[in-house]
Amino acid sequence: MSCSASQWTPQRPILFGSLLAFCFIFLFISYKADITYPDFGRVERAQSHDSIPSNSTELLNKTHSVVLVWMWPFGFKFELNCDVFNCTRCHLTDDKELYHKAHGVVFHHRDIHGSLENMPKGPRPVFQKWVWSNMESPTNSGKITGLNELFNLTCNYRRDSSIPVPYGYLYPVTSAEESFKLPAKDSYVMIVMGPPRHVYETLIISACKFYLSFENSFHRDYITEKFFNPLTWGSVPVVMGPPRHMYEGHAPAESFIHVDDFPSPKELAERLLYLDQNHTEYMRFFNWRSTFKVNPSLFGREIACKTCIYLQNHKEYQAFNDLNTWYWG
Image (cartoon, rainbow, N blue to C red):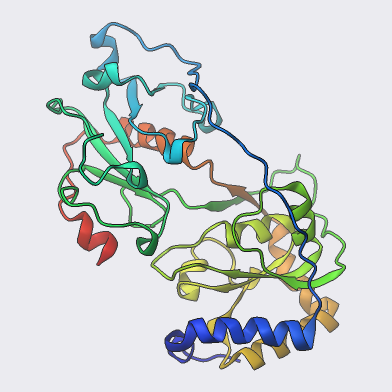
């Protein structure tokens, strides 16, 4: 049962509502708790586990790289070390006094002022690379005049980024890890608007057979936690976003259901109903769990650490000359 994506794309907003209505009326009763998300607050200052050598010669040698986090993503801070990435030769810092010693400077697009007043004012050292980072879609990221030819590297979810950082990825299961056990299912399907941040909501998702993983905008490689969370928690994602082959770049083809595989919401709903009544067919969506697990992105910390690792392996001069065309088209 397949069809081209063109049958869905022109009317996606309408079909989105139609699918939800059809599912709610004919297929299930979905429970959605009224959850109050915790206030994470802002850390006064992130602490680095690595001291920054004061000797500039040591900083600039081949065994150490310094990455300056110029602005914290949306104001939220993270640990300034790369231990989790097995990289001991990275020095992360938010100390702008070290600007002239940093090999890389990471800028978060959504925190750059339109006037560029919060960008560095001094000359850029010849060895230094500026890194543009952004995990939001083009629809939710406004263009800023003056950025087009300002950066050396890009770091975001796109696979053709200089430093790709997806919202999650699969890694092989080791023999020492506990085998995956499918959570008990007492609900049919659900959708959550926004990322789940409460353990209770996580439990609700894991108890549902299907999760409507509909992205808020449709762009190349824009596949968010709406996809990776249900994979992690044992629900089957029903995805609406970029084409199927882009999802298959992150997870097995048989681990999810894409709306583009069906001529209309009616056929999709019928397929979900069939799978609900056929346990063997439904369980095939979890065969991959015997060999892989899902690892969610660490976002800001991962961007900084992967930037550091990249800089250690790419000493040559690089420039990214047309950010606007590449990202916004």
